[in-house]
Image (tube, rainbow over all chains, first blue to last red; front, side):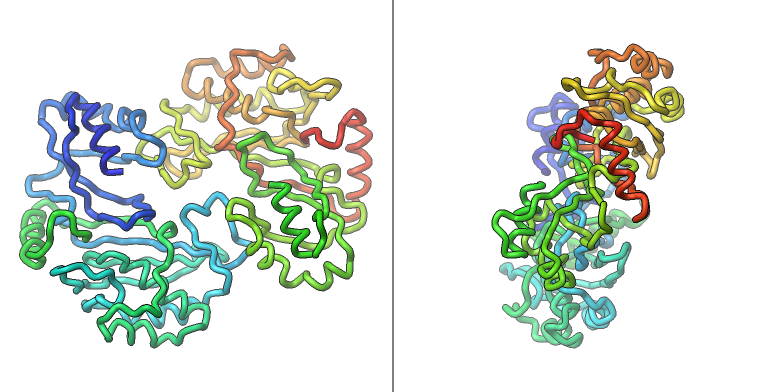
Length: 250
Length: 250
């Protein structure tokens, strides 16, 4: 996907290869990213030439599964990855056969048992805050798994659909999917609401946690500070995560 | 799709082959049918045994692109096809790159020019009522192309999205897609609003009408009379369309 956008930008700008993109969230394979943000450095003169037509031009160059919905110059110091304050994901599940929509099968999990959202939200509250999320992450050498989980709750946006809203400063590999898997086990009654917090406290990957499938997960929004705070935020992120190689997920 | 449901019903009932389905709308290939209705004759004892669990059972047996959302006994005289009073379709188009959603690419047409919905609705009004829709249909031997177009209008359910609501007693092959194609040409300014009604009045297939792609089209709803009117409606439909072979689209 990143490559497709870089190629399209390159064709638009007459550059080969196209400019390198830096993306805000490097999602697991199979995860959607409706709210992805990326930046690239392009010559100012080229931007001025193409600014007005850029969105329609890109729509014509990209395949229907990759779309650019907005494009704009950013203040100095903006870094799509390191300036980000938080990422918001959604996880969409259908637990009622009467609500099954074949047209949403690519972003909705069919769950064959009814889910108790009150229990799931009780369990979710026990995971909020800054913790070492090692229990819910795929381990990577020398990378911290401490994250601040700012929001995690489930609601029913329509009958038969359960949707999680998950916000953190950043996420580790598999983290949302592992949390979703643990909460689904609470929702269907196979685990008590206290269980996910117990798993979290143990700080080791627990094989009893099933990593939920990737396709119902979507990166919905990335938040940034205003212009004044951008460069400062990028510096702070780099200082807090000195171990981060450029390809590490946030 | 029909075959998949027949097979799943058969497995559920322990019948091989499964009971034959009669469907309300036989859509063109590639068209969705979120609101499809079908009937089948099954032994009463078998139904009584499976009634409660039927929906979840079918959800487990069917692939994610075919779903049964409700199942119930019907009054005597009900015929999913011949008792129907009307069919409602939707046609979903995106004409603003800022509104493009890759997750909706399977049911939304990307249209590279901005659409003027006022002009499209003006053109649509000229096609309402009972007409011979031969100009907008794929011809079939000995089949009437007279249909009553009850509603046809476009609205913006969200910014950047144009969606048609199309209701008729029944439709011919290609009819909604050909009407959509003619109206899109009005919407982008390449034809005047009077054009679709002129094409209609000529009553011959017009090669200037582009048949719009199938994937943004969805059968949303089929309406039926109440129990008393069902058998009467089926008789009337058969009398009005004596030429209809069992496989002809409605």
